[in-house]
Amino acid sequence: MATVIAHRGYAGVAPENTVAAAIRAAEDGETTMLEIDVQPAACGTPVVLHDERLEGRRNGRPLTDASGLVWETSLETLQLARVLGTDETVPTLTEFLEAIPETVGVNVELKNPGTTDLRFAESLSDSVRAERREVWTPFVERVVDVCAGFDGELLFSSFCEGALAAIRDIAPEYAAAPLVFDDLEAGLEIARRYDCEAIHPPRNVIVGTGLATTSYAGFSDAAPDIDILETAHAEGRTVNVWTVTNWHQFDQLAAAGVDGIIADYPGLGVPSSVR
Ligand code: G3P
Ligand code: MG
Image (cartoon, rainbow, N blue to C red):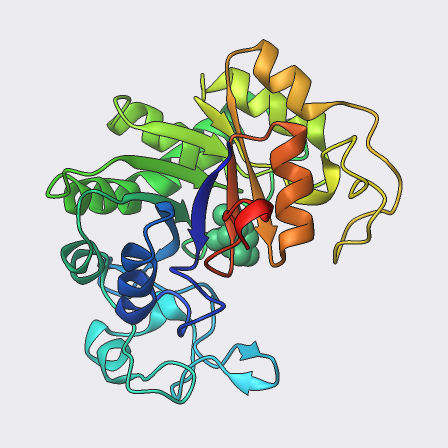
């Protein structure tokens, strides 16, 4: 049975990446882990927010009532911001981890802290790799410092190679996973390079689910030429898939044999026989 990883807290039922979303997920009884997006405030303090801009849009609404780039904004300003028209604040990573029981794990997605290290679908020279790891190191050190106070399971993921390189240097005891777009071979190579315990592909690239030809924003409609599930499992890596919003997708992916499903709504993991 696939485990449920609540996406952005539980973005489908509470303002995303807020303490309210964390509490909702922790209470539902099926959530194994919470997935959250973490980036630095101007002072380097890790905060939990998805978009690089505070005024990013969500279904036509502003994500917060503040504006500007998160990594250029003071912590004081960030803490005054309210999320999606509610009273919920942008939590620091410390506040977020303190709000959840340690029976629930956390998948910390390391978002780009204002660098040019974007996706890893390209081959890089060793010197560029080293530079990217250096750029990420101060932020990853701050995140690891905060996480040291959390006793639950932790899994670090990122679309950025420098983030995974830094985690491996600073805290090799933590599990890590590349977040993959449609370049599956590049993702697998990163998983091998950094000896990652897991790999996080988008749901539509899992072959045999009927989702492989389902359009997902930014992806081609073609079925992938690599069976990433089979390949990753053969290499001993777990496969956690993002992002699922309905039972149909959940059931297909669970039947295909994925290990974890990053989902927006609670209840998706309830077996169809008892729904
Ligand atoms: O970690 C899985 C998923 O969260 C990646 O996409 O944009 O929701 O952070 P995004
Ligand atoms: Mg995320």
